[in-house]
Image 1 (cartoon, rainbow, N blue to C red):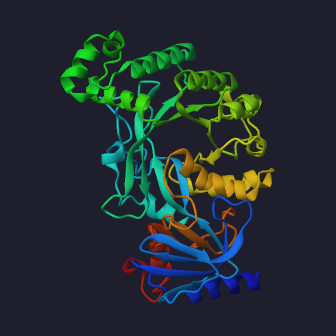
Image 2 (cartoon, rainbow, N blue to C red; image 1 turned 30 degrees about the vertical axis):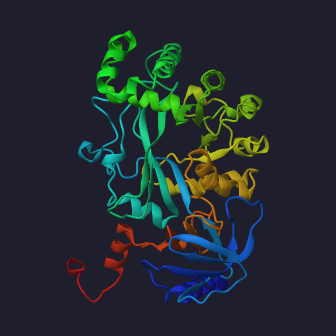
Image 3 (cartoon, one colour; image 1 turned 90 degrees about the vertical axis):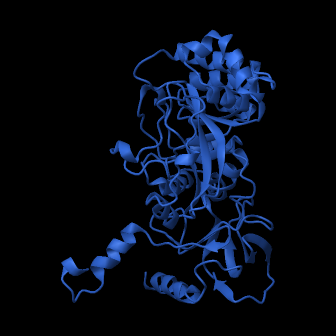
Length: 423
């Protein structure tokens, strides 16, 4: 224990001279790298310039900011797939919630509500999350609502991708028939694929199209909703549908094949029961690998070994967490998955490159030459909940790891010569 503490504090001392903000050139040496694509780690140097990874080799470069990462693990920045970061501050206070629509359904977008000063951002960043996909709450439509991708750099000039995913849900509801839900999803998809390019060129054409479609009137769809449906049908937009029951998953596979959807299934607690069908469908899954006890009648086959079995079948996996706001707990989930048979590199990929590939995020989630310099240096095993990142880089910027919690800690553990009221 003493040796570990010495290594941790010595490592902190080695990097304290590095410029904390805005460094154009950084060299990380002797890093034990999990790059998000290889099955095995390797030791190398990482040269960062102008926000990009320029070189990964044993070469040394003449730069001012050098970080010795000897004995430490370096990973890509982890990406949370299922969050309300930036659009919900306190769930119990409606004035801090921007996740629910009142007028729009399918075309509801959360992008313009994103708050880069949310306290959730530094909290999750300091625990290892460098970017996130922020999703709206489900609307009255079984598919509908547009999520966006954001870098968690707290920059007031928001860096992200608007409306890059649509969401939906099947099952798990206390009211309504899932048979009707599937019928409505199919009707909406038929509507989406019937929209011709000329229709979305003007609002007049959209209004004319809407007047000819009874479903539009029944669901009280708006012009913005028609645009979103057209985008779903014509731009390979990823569609996340939350579903857990095995029989529902099979129906979603049928819909994916019928409409050639870019489908992602979230939840999928009974996925192991239909593993061969999922393998053939090439549908990525977002799962909570900690689940071992059913939370509903849709999850009776929940099993803590599911992630390992799904990985062995070659299914692309990503992770989410059940805790509101604490999205960094996907690290803990990944560690539990590894403890129950999943490969270590597979768990790292589920937190990084699998997300990037599934949602077309470019070079996010990878440590490779030419990639965005989103990476983290860890004080110990990143899949161990007690481990913390020593350094977090987002687009090559060494970001601040101060949080409201750390400020409160410092406030009441320093200046002890003063009464509490003056701290």
